[in-house]
Image 1 (cartoon, rainbow, N blue to C red):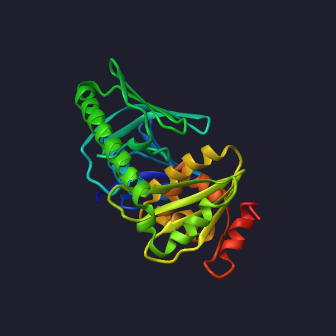
Image 2: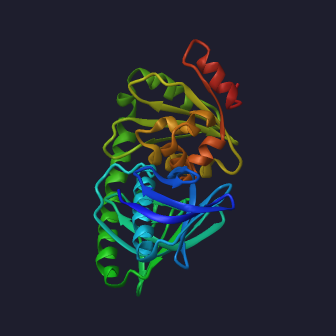
Length: 336
């Protein structure tokens, strides 16, 4: 990575410095030094030939970059974007990337700015120069729509996204978006149809646990995949603000318990999103906040997924698979 000469302003002190863009941080060296992890940056702004790094508790200003100012900002954005993409837990190759304006609603809040707009086979990713990077999976979305140079879409949990100002990329981007949306939804529905038909065989020894969930009076039982290419899956019993979730993997994981507000249907929708988001990184749904803080990429991942944050906030413990498992689970669901 290139090293840039600048003046840094940190903690009300200005000094000559060298700024180097790394894969996971920006290093600032001078009278004062700082290693600023991308995981700690909330926003990066180019303001009047000054590059501003906004952290949760302070701001750092880099100026006097001269003709390198815009190049420095673009290179920093690209490095920050790459880390944001990693934090979105994407496991496929991009199809198309362009740049434009975006807006989306999430948990009743609205965000808008300029962003890298990246199309993957199974999702649309919006990656701005702040912590608002989001991945919108096609399997949970409505059919994307186009109105002139504006593209729109809605998720089944209510999030609404819009992108525009793509210029000449509008038509090819929308064509790829629509094609991959249709293919993904078709594959996702077929994969879940096969799961529903074959779930008892695929459960093996865990089928007894599934039968306990089925027999829980008044409970709604749901099951789902983590990803199309992943044979492992999950199933849950949900009742009146409480849920028990089993993850079917090669390991004998515990049963995870959740307490939540809102309807059971809303919980199931958010659970589906969270499980599809984490895929192979399932520890994200249960590791402690202390452990999470130790892994910068995981901190970024949780910050960029409202559904993973929801599931973590609803965590109420777990039940070990032993002789008391059935009684403990049914007691939690208030079925005994």
